[in-house]
Image (cartoon, rainbow, N blue to C red; front, side, top):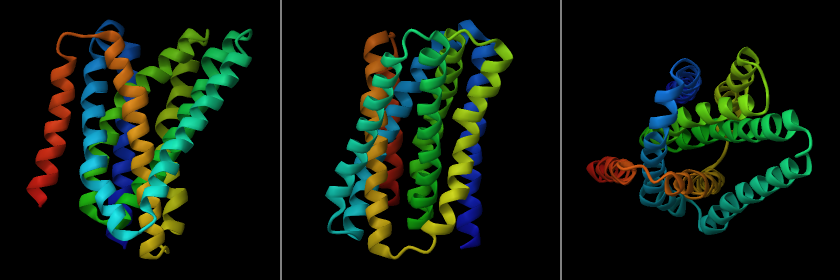
Length: 243
């Protein structure tokens, strides 16, 4: 159990580090970051969606007969939360700092906190499931750090304020979420753990299909399709090499 804790915690710290690198890159190398972020987004989407369908969902279904319900609940929950954030942003559009900067930051912060929960859940199921899920999750943290920083800057915040708020919301919340959830998840029985595991890919599929892929379609970069296919290929190779 101790090894599982440190592995999950190490993965969550890696995610926080990658997010921090994303924030640093967009602040230090603005032009390069804007030009290449889409490739990280596409690759992460390929890994997240493929890992969810090919490994995490079947694993959850084998642990809990009601897993399809929890899978749907995971997807729907993030959809409803996103709708709430968008409605809240629109409602506060007259206040530039609040609408464009702070509210999306809170949404990203909540999402990153849930990422921490997912690390606890997947590593508790098995190290392989945790590592496989973490690959896609860690990769999508890089563009998430960039997006958080840019939103705060667009909202009118100064460089240092945007840097600190982006780090707190997008990076630090992931290991905090893992530490908060692990003591409870480590005591769960197999069916309940399976239910939570099914909830996780619902959230991951939502992130990949609703946030990452539409961004790729919008930008239409020359090699973005190859980045997406590379992410899918990496996931397929890892999943079936284990089998």
